[in-house]
Amino acid sequence: MHLAVFLLASVLSAATFALDNGVMRTPPMGWLAWERFRCDIDCKNDPKNCIRQNLFIDMADRLSEDGWRELGYVYVNIDDCWSSMERDENGRLQADPKRFPGGIPKLSRYLHDRGLKLGIYGDMGTHTCGGYPGTTLDKIEIDAQTFADWEVDMFKFDGCYSNATEQAKGYPLMSKALNATGRPIGYSCSWPAYQGGLPPKVNYTQLGEICNLWRNYGDIQDSWDSVLNILEWFFENQDVLIPAAGPGRWNDPDMLVIGDFGLSKDQSRSQMALWAIMAAPLFMSNDLRTISSEARSILQNKMVISINQDPMGIQGRRLVKEKSNIEVFWRPLSSDASALVFFSRRTDMPYRYQTSLSKLNYTTGSYKIYDVFTDKTMILKDSTNFVVSVNPTGVVMWYVSAPSKLNRRQFYRGGNVQDSVYTGDENANPRVFL
Ligand SMILES: *[C@@H]1O[C@H](CO)[C@@H](O)[C@H](O)[C@H]1NC(C)=O
Ligand SMILES: *[C@@H]1O[C@H](CO)[C@@H](O)[C@H](O)[C@H]1NC(C)=O
Ligand SMILES: *[C@@H]1O[C@H](CO)[C@@H](O)[C@H](O)[C@H]1NC(C)=O
Image 1: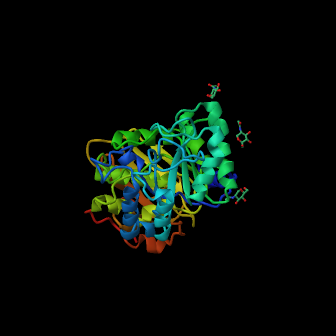
Image 2: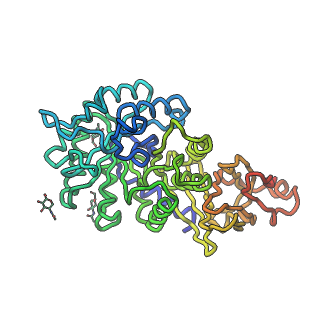
Image 3: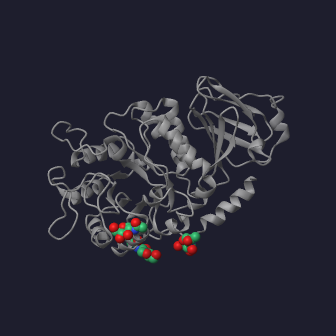
């Protein structure tokens, strides 16, 4: 599709109503316990890693002291296995008293005092996936009120142990119940993931009206295979998913596993870059106490974060799928800018991919290019053929500023630019064309 036509279509779809609670106008960012810490409740033998108050306090300290909060990573989210096996005498959920000695209110105060926000987890069904008390239809109002009383800022509603009929009632009811508390609470719905993620079983118009974000697909694991599998599903179904996203309503391909054990440096950059293209929520699930500086610099890349957080909130798309196993992704950004990602599925060696901006649907003009992982800049004319060198399972990611009219004399001052070569190699010195 031509750039302008696609932009128009996106703007029209973004006019659809979003859940009117005022929160998450850009994709939410923060930290979520599940992928890295799961349901480890063995605090006796594994005190550093078990699900308890101290784990969340440790992560809050890291977020506020190590530069994360200022970049937008403000949510600290509890997942499954936080509660007691019994509701209290008033039928309210309660935190496990040994592992959360101050209860959830103490934790939310600790976070709010540091400019952070607290997320909590529940399950539409008889039990959570981990076997803790669930929220059946009759418990929806009391649980919503409990979370509001605890000053929780976000709520993830999982869907284990319920069927499609109950989910079709429960997810909208919870949205109403959260609204009725008067506290703006970001609402994350796992509903579509339990219904295959696609129409006609999933109604994305309705989801956008009742939820701020939703898990469309299966859980991420700490492996490149898992990241690839998720990417494939999201981009194979991009025509369904892109119109569903916009300010206040986001598709959620699940957590960032950067900083864990499964991804190489190139694969970590790939996850970060493509999550930004997808306008995905950025919830890290890693150990911020011991994270490597390499993983931290990828997660703290300001340019990638600003692309992810673009205020127009238009989800990007895969433009090109080459036989060579190179793919090109594009996301329109505000101020007529855009982001491009060149991604290699190859497993041999850095691949020299040749294309031009006009082949990628860019209109006539000259564009300033900023390579977000190497900090190199250059000017590219739409018709100039260039070469990017993309590492196996890696990416080259560009921020492309708005086109400016060509000044021919200036442009040709350096001689013939048609065959100039750009290489994404970090150690190479890319040609600057002007
Ligand atoms: C509840 O919904 C109404 C109507 O959509 C909206 O104006 C209001 O801001 C919402 N309140 C909260 C706390 O989400
Ligand atoms: C869904 O679960 C409810 C409650 O257990 C049950 O009454 C209903 O028959 C179930 N519906 C289907 C379609 O299985
Ligand atoms: C999807 O939900 C919207 C909004 O709630 C509703 O107007 C529409 O009829 C639904 N579509 C289908 C196919 O059920």
